[in-house]
Image 1 (cartoon, rainbow over the protein chains, first blue to last red):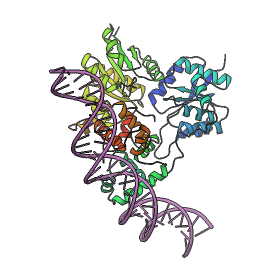
Image 2: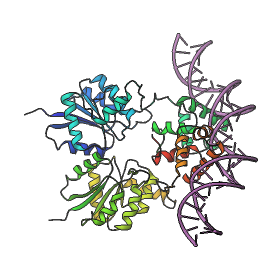
Image 3: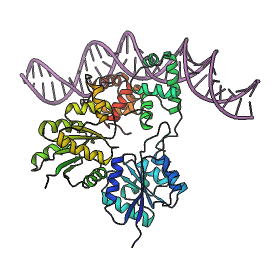
Image 4: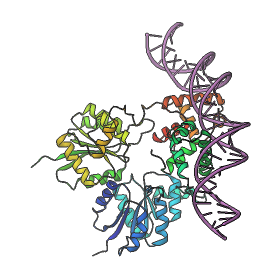
Amino acid sequence: MKKKITIGLVEDQLLFRNGIHAILSGWEDLEVIYESGDGYSVIESLQKSARIPDVMLVDLSLPPNGDKPYSGEQLTIDLADCFPEVKVLILSAHQDEKFIARLIEIGAHGYLVKDSDPVEVYQAITTVYEKGAYINHMTLMAIQRNIGKRTQSILQPTSDLTSRELEVLGLVCQQYTAEEIGEKLFISVKTVNGHRANLLLKTGSRNVAGLVMYALRNELVKF
Amino acid sequence: MKKKITIGLVEDQLLFRNGIHAILSGWEDLEVIYESGDGYSVIESLQKSARIPDVMLVDLSLPPNGDKPYSGEQLTIDLADCFPEVKVLILSAHQDEKFIARLIEIGAHGYLVKDSDPVEVYQAITTVYEKGAYINHMTLMAIQRNIGKRTQSILQPTSDLTSRELEVLGLVCQQYTAEEIGEKLFISVKTVNGHRANLLLKTGSRNVAGLVMYALRNELVKF
DNA sequence: CCAAAAGCAAGTATAAATACCTGTATAAAA
DNA sequence: TTTTATACAGGTATTTATACTTGCTTTTGG
């Protein structure tokens, strides 16, 4: 009997994870042996595990746990570091060239959008297992167009904001003016503006528009 | 033989849709008889179809097609209008109380987060089919806390923005000041501010923070 | 224990955004 | 044609945000 390709799934949405599991179970030469809903525990639990998956399907947008985000990007880096023999296939909702190039650069072996056909997922898994890479047309184009350019981390270097700053940032995103924020937090408008200034500095933004974009990108506020 | 509950799936991400299909196929009393990747065609194709699903699973965040958005919210309204006998179960990535209350109000028969257990999905389907509603604890709390409050449309009443306004909005989100936008578009700062004022009015925002949130929510600008 | 660093609060001056208003050109409706 | 509506451009006055600076307090590291 031919050896089955062992799969690991890292995806926060339980339904989606179960769905992929169900789909993959339709192929006899695949076997899902590991699942996780977040990125934190993956490295640790794999190190304790006796069976290391051949291929890991990793969701790009894993949710942060409390304050500390642990993205699919970070997991890819850590997997490449701790388990270089494991092939990493990124699953992403979006088809953004910068993301693709970035992820390939840091160690992913393939990139699939969540809009893919299940057959393509199967092909990607077998190809990445046999050949060590699965680069489809979209991915290739993205790589080609971004070779030479310095790629950008998706989560920008997590400029650590203080709790007070996070509080102010949240209220800014909810369209409160500095004065209203002051009232809510029982501090002077001037102080609020001080925090705003620090936020602009730390996030590298020019104005509130930048702050909101930053907050949403880093999932610091609800959509 | 007992009649199977017929299911319709409306979900843009192909993998996710196939995954749910695969999961639901595990229950013998369920049968998926309709699938769609967008909201547009649903009403029309159902009207032509001989078999109308008993239960429709609808993704809340269906993508816009070109300029015209057709959200799960709109589809819920239209389904309640054209097929009142069909039970609508909303699938959402987020657990936002305002969304939940709003959807129940406009005709949804249940609300599930994508983080749900497959068993819960099955229970929701059978319950909504037999009892006409599936309200779990989370949903009930959301309803209770929002009774009396006027609920807010998720896609706010699709304020159709002019091309010029969209242009300005995009630049606002990119952190350009009114003056810079004026230079880019070869118009006066005053004019730019005029467009901004209209944007604030149309989107129901108080300031740029609101504009950025609106733009991102409606996918008018890149993340 | 003391010095350095950093969070928090607050003030002044300037730049920018927001509210409110007017006019013109264009296109659809009466 | 005349009316009506609206996208677009521009203006003035006011409010709000941003830049820069200062002092107080807590925390950190030598």
